[in-house]
Length: 371
Image (cartoon, rainbow, N blue to C red; front, side, top):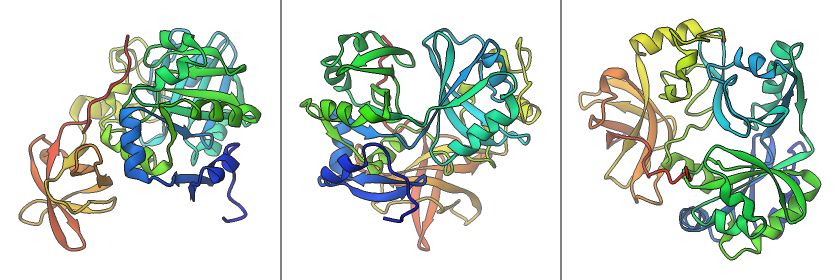
């Protein structure tokens, strides 16, 4: 392990559990455990998987104008967000590109924000620079973050506190788990039902061990986390979305509520609003789509996508064999003219053409608990 890699509060537990560790987002993180990525993936889809996501950034925004202030940086409705409701949001730049994607939950007296690991320092600086004079920006370096994901996650977590059963997708609550004060949201990034648990760092190992004693729960590494989110059609920042992609190109316009669009009460007023409004009205020249293949050769990030005559029409941004479907799947940006579901294309893998078809997303159904 490189000496400059950071460790999460669960680092020693990962080693104890036999994890293979890799650098990720500046941290030494578990990519898989002894059973391997395929088994971990299938276990999460069938039962419950415990993920260490403590490398991600947690921030509180406090003050009367915190919601209005945050809304000046995102194309998302924050002002009307009810207490204990959560929303997916995007920081944008002046060109309409995406600086990061994030989760925002309104609590009684603050906004609880979770940002990506690789972007957290620049995100916190972005918040402090642009809205630090309007509200308090308080990073939470002493909080760890655990994700419990899968159809049996609620069964396992409810043994520690039955109150979690009342939560529905994209809501949160203050919950005591194994005697520890936590903030829990019913959300995650696998497409399954599940929870994300903000826990004091010095209590994270205690809570993780309490969860791992539940018969449904096994530890899951970053490898399966990636294949799970890919099957769910969800973007990985820095791969499927970045500063060069807009929300319209990235096919995440569902995150932009009517009130923030042209004609809405609070339209615009965020970085890149003009570009994004123009693309919402007229469309973009390229679009993120799902690709699926009946061939066996996996298609990875960076593979070119061409038509039968060799015309270059795009590039793959994420790709993997799908453990659930048994077929190669990928996310790619294609020219809009060729982004229609059913379009036949080819991905170039080591100069070999892999036949693929534009398909609907997600690749596997979402199973969020909406009540």
